[in-house]
Length: 240
Image 1 (cartoon, rainbow, N blue to C red):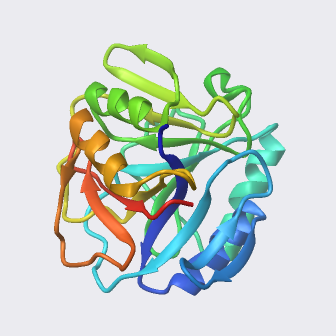
Image 2: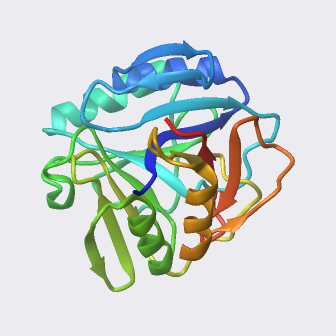
């Protein structure tokens, strides 16, 4: 049985401050979990929590993963932008074209995210978090489809996307050219085998799919650090 996507983890200089920001943007409940630290619990079909991990490393370069937040109208889009700015976000330029209708922002620690215009057909049936948009190869899209047991919902021109059979956000990969990797990713996935599963068995399966075992010196107890075929770090937790 495939791992579940248990959490999306942010490395943060000030985890509590960043958690409060995203709690305000998303409307999710913030809790202090004895095992996982500061986390946000979803109020919709997102299917995973968001975890904030303390880190002393500075952000370098653009993240390989960001949220695409959806809008039901132009007014709704502007309300999301205004709410985000009021909580500490700022406008940024990452090369978007003037004719593009989405709004690009950064959270208080510089993590990029987009507020998508209404009428986006690709995200039409998704919730507020429409997608986790990733820089990545076609190979890595196939890897994560096999890893999570999520079907491909897009596979064209080396761009891929997967989505849980239970709904929630899509995870997308834009294909080549890939941006250079600047140190450790500030966002990564935490996976967990099912309660009756075995972490080592799951790690062996992931290795057979193209993952690698890594030692960054930043691991935490109960978390096995690995990387996907594009070199993106992720953790395999004990069964949950």
